[in-house]
Amino acid sequence: DAGVIQSPRHEVTEMGQEVTLRCKPISGHNSLFWYRQTMMRGLELLIYFNNNVPIDDSGMPEDRFSAKMPNASFSTLKIQPSEPRDSAVYFCASSFGRGGVTEAFFGQGTRLTVV
Amino acid sequence: SQQGEEDPQALSIQEGENATMNCSYKTSINNLQWYRQNSGRGLVHLILIRSNEREKHSGRLRVTLDTSKKSSSLLITASRAADTASYFCATASIFSGGYNKLIFGAGTRLAVHP
Image 1 (spheres, one colour):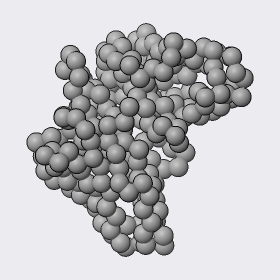
Image 2 (tube, helix red, strand yellow):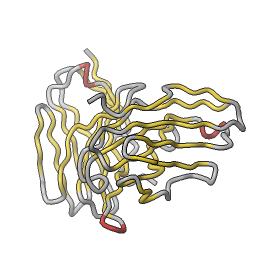
Image 3 (cartoon, chains in turn purple, green):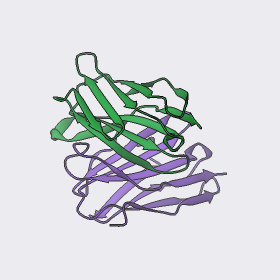
Image 4 (tube, helix red, strand yellow):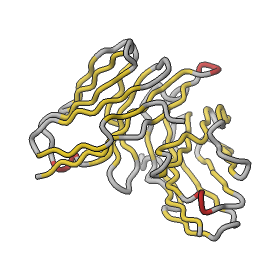
């Protein structure tokens, strides 16, 4: 298995633009997490899906952020409109089971820079 | 919100020495996990210890868990320069519906000098 695949690896966009981050979890995993990592706030859990259903989105910072998981092999995190404070590394992770009961496998991340 | 807090924030040692990192958390947990992150890379799972376990070993790694004190420690023995990375603890805590949230601490930056 190729592991969790995220795209793009790097994204530079102008303030106000829409940004879409993509994630392909490991086949057979039914839990998917989106995290955001910054120096100031560390790793923040944004949203957690189980069997393609959003279970907890309390970490989504604002209405500008939205996430979808249309099927078991694909998820997106969208920011519209983007702001400079959204600059961070966004990680997708997947695991098997009801959330963190087993190890999570992380993608390489998308480094987002909003100018 | 962060559940775990690592201590120390940064650790600098010589090759061959042991490195100990500590993690404290606030709520009841299902399990506690340790991850490693090399600069610019994703996190890699190291070891998982369940709430009913007290100690676990994997190669040069030793993890302990004290649920009464809500704390865990990660010991890396005979450290190598290649162990240089950030180390994070993550707690899996049950919330509504029987699902588990996986929440990470702030991490410990470990530097191992040749």
